[in-house]
Image 1: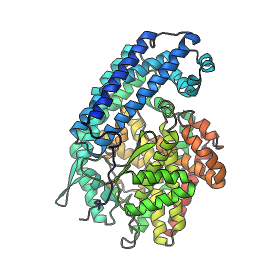
Image 2: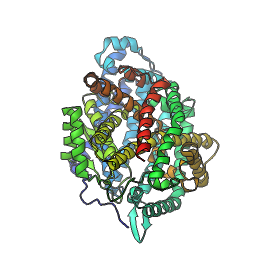
Image 3: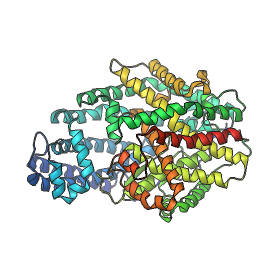
Image 4: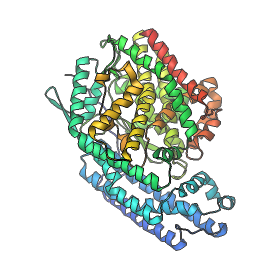
Length: 598
């Protein structure tokens, strides 16, 4: 059986930040964080920050300014060390030294979280209008302070919040870590070989249907063997989420998620309503793909299969992807190309699938304007789009570099803006440059795979998580119940476009997004990001120069305003179903073109 060639794929370099996990530099940074946390606590105690304290504006202003400065400094240090350790574990979950240090940092972060909770409660009692008039620092952080006043209404008592933060280490955080460690270390037996799960899942892109089916069956068997502890993790995390959201007076975990993502229910309903309307058109893509593959109907293991003659499908080697992305980013701006050039030249990217490495792809900011990008690259145009997408996140980080840590806190809904935009630049350029029907099918296939995932599959995840949270209020759910809920959500979204006997009942175990202890509904923001990004791209095509004049400022402001306000800068009303329908029309047009080529 053929396996993915990975020998030439790069690994990222974390040594510019710390020489190693056991280096004196890292130990010094850790000790400095401990010291700073202690000093910040002393400052809070000295000024009575927390509880029912409500000082007048004149008294509170200089204290708040000091808190903002000190908190920003500490957050920057914690972020750097956390990114380094998370980066070490992401590519090798068997790195015991990194795991141990990360555990220590998480424990120290509880103290920081407790202090942030105290600030939130204190800010909730301040006269912000008068303070913002008096203080430039408060004015610069006004949006975060206004949100803190809302969040303050959803806090338990200080002792309860402190206890919740401490228990979370052995609760939600521990269960989340279990999922990440366990799933990254699963090994799968396949045709006499033992392969990491990430490599087996990559075989879903094999041109050979027999290979795809064998990988799918082996994958399902592996998930079944490990399902009990994974189900325990999911039950525990969702049970904790239900308990804490109720105690904090949120109507539901979804309401808390909407607040965290800077959107309202009207926006969510408009967006998901438009997606539901588009489901018949989106399923046309899968039916057309079945025709291209010579099938009556797709099985799950066919959904991301390549289309066209395997002998003529272009292999996009990593070097090809690099040069193409650099060229297309350069058509937008020199700044975007120069950033991407740095990412490739300075080893910001880890592309090789291997044992102990997590599945999927992500981008994380580390320090200043530097990011690190994880992918599990295979030589297809789909992976070119994924790489461009993650590099888009890195470009967003470049625009945020001048902001303070508090100002940089971007909700997931807006965090997908630059990534979708960059992916669209590359996709459209590839379509324009294509001189063969087979290549155009391949490029449209990559675009529609991504769009289908961000709409139909994300809707299935939203429905699944909604139902899990609802039922978890009564009791724990068994492995079979979780599988049934997953298949039910797939039936409602994929419908008969995928063979109901050959779906994926264990997708709840696959996706790490369900296992965030601090963030429920880690799904709908991806739909928002895709469709918002497509809407922005339409504005770019209509007037490139005017768009460029405001785009970087929009990206740098994603932590300074809610989604509706930022969208209005480009004439977009995110509460209007018409906007979302317009973005989905772009996807529909791709489906039409795909059907014609099929």
